[in-house]
Amino acid sequence: MKIFVVNAGSSSMKYQLIDMETEGVLAKGLCERIGVTGCITHKAADGRVYSADTAMPTHAEAFEAVVYAMTQSDAKVIDSLDEITAIGHRIVQGGDTYSESVKIDEDVMKVVDELSELAPLHNPANLLGIKACYKLFGDKTPQVAVFDTSFHQTMEATQYVYPIPYEYYDKYKIRRYGAHGTSHRYVCDELFNITGMKKEGSKVITCHLGNGCSITAIKDGKCFDTSMGFTPLDGFMMGTRSGAMDPSVLTYIANKDGLSADDISNILNKKSGVLGVSGVSNDNRDVAAAAEAGNERAKLATDMQRYQIIKFIGSYIAALGGIDAIVFTGGIGENDKDLRAAVMENLKFLGIECDAENNAKRGENIRVSTADSKVGVYVIPTNEELVIARDTLSLIK
Ligand code: AMP
Image (cartoon, rainbow, N blue to C red):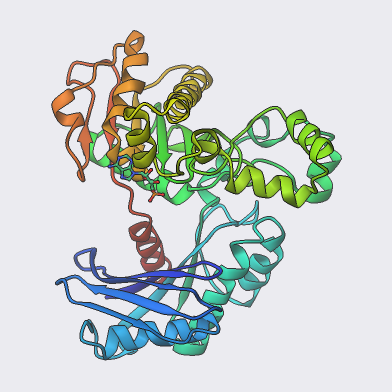
């Protein structure tokens, strides 16, 4: 049984074809510049690659290019679309409507559309992906929506209401929703699988650190609190995003420089974080290299990022009333051993000791705190596509 996993953005679209017998990836690819020009890069599991510049005025043409790549190109992996049993879509915002994945129908599409107000960059694009699949596959192939927000729906009002006039929650549903939920759910489930830890009574912190970063406090296997909020701008500094800060700074800068709300949003989302402070790059590798070469602002950005991560973990340990395990994932969480070592060094008072040999390894589920550390610290590579495929399979069965 093969599941097609789709992650549609406004001008790009990532996909994977997963064989559910083995949970292996048969092919994966990326369409870019949709609506502008269009190109596709498609990779089969055996290393064959197909890439082409193909006109993609809309997502429909992007999907046609994917079908060609999968069924007819030099890197084809199936003979026809009939071999695909179902399609799973990553949907960014499910609001407070969806605490679990759902089979897509007209009603679901309507809600995803309505929730575009909360995720204007993502939900409309996700919906385009669904519509393009209907056009291509018809009604026979079931489609499933897996929401980035649904794992966080177990938070209580104490964690998700913002301290602004309550009417804004009533009127506009302004509250903490969180993001990266599929990743936090996956790595937490993997943690339980590899350690044999029981969900009940467990206190876990999962750190998804990539270009976007979020940290989640998980109690009894359920989200208790998470750093991203109404949007993925909340929390702590990321590649280009500021994370939380004194809101007065925003009105002050707006008044000083005559900036609009959209200008401010652009600065906070695209020009801040590691890029804004370092002035070098949003990529930790570039910033680490610049810091090594003596760039003071790059060093400051690195130090700030580590400090904010430590502070968040510390606050969640207090919120959970203890800690059993901490998990790192995402591009930075999985690869930046120096950042992990710095965090563990600061958490020594909890009985955490870094296992330098394991901490230097890559690409596998691994414990990076020593075996006799009181708290297990782990690296678990995330796999959101697999969660989407598994949810899709279980909903169509
Ligand atoms: P993601 O958004 O999860 O793909 O993560 C992207 C980020 O991971 C990049 O911006 C890099 O900062 C970071 N990253 C990837 N590889 C490494 C590495 N070897 N060392 C440090 N950071 C890395």
